[in-house]
Image (cartoon, rainbow, N blue to C red; front, side, top):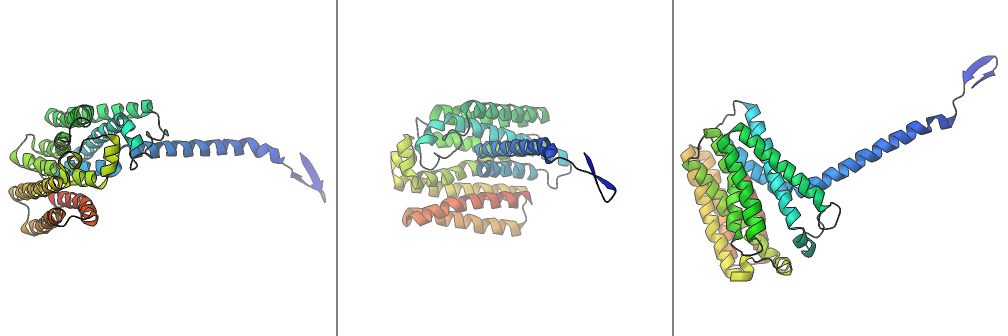
Length: 315
């Protein structure tokens, strides 16, 4: 439409002409927000802190044999395959344990427990990530792929599907699966399973009770409500604390022995010795001076210890 004013012509565009473009923009904004919200829900299924910690052990195992890293594509492929395998098994575990999560106060807000995600889409995502992670690992190295598959099998089938609801000793098998990433990373770097790799796997295996059993004591009522057998419910708190202390000592000695055999510089070994002493002292404090504060402090420090040990192992 045109009009004139003082002999000059100008164009008048109806306001409604822009409505379709505005609606189109709103539509794509809505789609983007929906996708991001869904991705955030999927991400929460991976237990990112737990997955990240296990991933760091695998990368540290690799770098214990290949430091400095000469081929970064190998490092990136290792990280991606381990992440997919670990995240996939974690999601499958959450899919299977969704009835437990609904009962426990600590976990009832998780996406599967409160209905924000359907079991079908969670299982599909877990299976896809698991198959891609193990498949990629096998293509990289048969030995590496076999160890990654063993970790997933122990975690999903042996620990979660078979033993978790039957016996408190299921944490041993959960610990074995937790030790597989660092063994896999070491095996991929060396091309074989060696004594150092086994020591590193043992360090993670015996570190896991320190983490899980302190959790079981802190959330004792939750596990009771879900009818999951734990060391505190079967053997009592004092035996559980003693188990944590022994496990902490073995974990610290195992990783120290592995680092010495690798040839870690003495400056780093001294730092590791200080970190190990802190872990052992906190574990002993839970035995001789048990308090909720000490127990929670050990729970947090155990993760800091393992992450710091992996950083020292990597550099």
